[in-house]
Length: 341
Image (cartoon, rainbow, N blue to C red):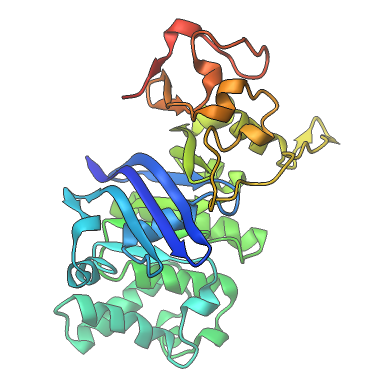
């Protein structure tokens, strides 16, 4: 069952410099109990996508076009009051820096109870008991004691766990995690990822995980969306993206990640150039100025999403039946590929 369907989403920011086209027409869906990873460089449109889903795009930004279907309702057409009722209750979000997301002046327990009392009919006593059970669920030791402590008394990892507990307080169907492990050390990162995976299994939670870290994506996601320049470059299963990448940008991301090959350190291959200026986005493929295989058509026209295999698509002209073959880089099979309608 599909929990979320995003169709041709376009979100822009109208500044004194002009229109910043942050998200330029993307589509994807999320099944119940699934973890979807959205990955790309800074400025690719990942966080704007999540804020669009949550209805948190403020002036000078707005959703220009598209649908965001959550359980059949188009979130982009709801009023502020209707969105407020959904946020925190049916859809919850956790952010990158837990210290700035928690109010330093209020106890952890008070902040969790506030969300519960806002969206449920529980009494204060019931909310207290529920908050304690949530802290237990996210593996915070001595939850009764921790309820009465302030954010500065928690470690970074425990603050992130407290935020996850707060996000789960009203049994949401969808959790959006925007760079949830970036501010944490490697050991704590692994613990938070393990927690998210356990929660997905325990309560059948659907999760969108936004990150620039391919290692995080490989760890817990089942499906992956690769974004660049406000567009989707490639999407498919985690196996497709890591074992059979079919877009030069995806391949470039792989080559720029540190790795150990047979005990010796492999040389990093950076992606030359810089991301596009979304005030004046390129006419063709946004990656074409940095792509080692760019053709003339790439500079003039963005490629459609070519269907490669079941659920695996890539927006690259190399998959056109008349494109040249790039051996040992991207496998092009000509007429076997179809354009996604």
